[in-house]
Length: 482
Ligand code: TXE
Image 1 (cartoon, rainbow, N blue to C red):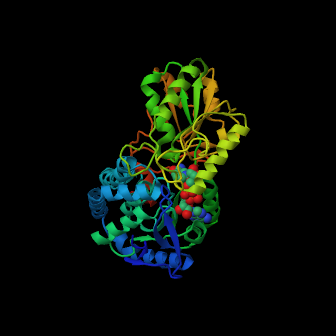
Image 2: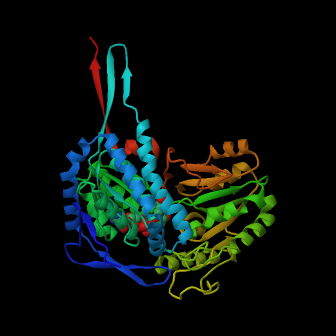
Image 3: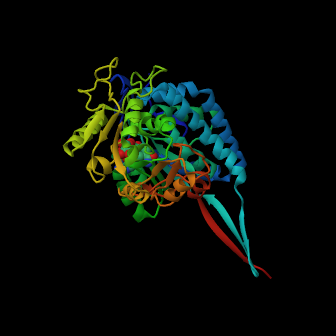
């Protein structure tokens, strides 16, 4: 594959330093291509290009920009199979998942925000002696920093509203997954998006992301990634009073009540636990089960987990591919070891050496989905984010106890409640300290709704109007009436 390059001011260019990083296929360990190992000089070029393009892009009408988004959605849709195969190769996720989730949602993100723009109302507030008109204008040049688990899904989630609101962009994808960000730049290039409106800089977080956040001419930063990195980004941006949106980690609770229709939801619970090998910040990584159904639940759930087809990502029948890297696999295995040290029992899966994945390359980052039982809810495995195919099981005896357990970690991103009594589920959901709570479903997404977490899961919300407000500045113009 041709080397991946930066996309700055409408041109594909290498890093000024000429340095590169290897891009590896995590399912095979094979070298895919190289990416620029950019640094502050490349970031400065990108920010300069974005700022040079600001005035012209901001002068376009929102209708024109909405039309651009429709064209981008159409182009991505025509390349959906390419997006899916690049994403699968870059992340190790199954081709079916990449097609169904990553490629499809990237198209939806552009199409949704284009359609949503028609619902944007100019806000006017009339009082007895004054008329207030709220003017919406672009923030300016925005920095978008994204992680490796849902590369184009999360990048397009930010690019679409940022462009719609008239901003120019400097984007930095994860160094582990550059391919679909590169494809997006190619789409913009082919469509003739004006140079400098979208700029893409590849490289390492501290060498590219950090200078982006520090740059005085980047007026806002939307970051999705780990909580630890989120703290670094926030500490850098805060004293500069940049607008900041942080989508961070999670340790989400899946609460199964005793009246849940167990056998009809077990596949949903397996999906909520192990989609993308658990590398989705919305995955349920702690399963809280009412004590009266613990045995029945555990048997059904473990059976469902063991039925997952773990294998090469390019096969249509694969349910779960590899993790993002051998490094990450080692991190996840260290948590499995810790879980056992903390008194847990591995019911299925476990260390790769104990449960190898047949038919996969030895240096592919494959790990069977793992269920650990018997840990207390304050064990490190039950409170720290593992971000891999590992869930812990816990029992509760009352709704209040389940809510207390769900709220007992420092995270607050998402959760789900499974019950035959929706009103009971809603009463519980109102007490769960998370940005999103699903009842009898998971990853059911209406893009108009606010998305994001509280506590250590982040600051701010994106989605629908929340994205439009984040990516715009508001001025209230008050006119005294005669
Ligand atoms: O995160 P990182 P990763 C979390 C997930 C896990 C972690 C894995 O829970 O803990 O992220 O993703 C760039 N200044 N989520 O390893 O390291 C880095 O290059 C500026 C939750 O990618 O945080 C990458 O592009 N940028 C999330 C991006 O930050 C820096 C969904 C994220 O990297 C930087 C996905 C710095 N100093 C993962 N250092 C959610 N809530 O949706 C690194 N980066």
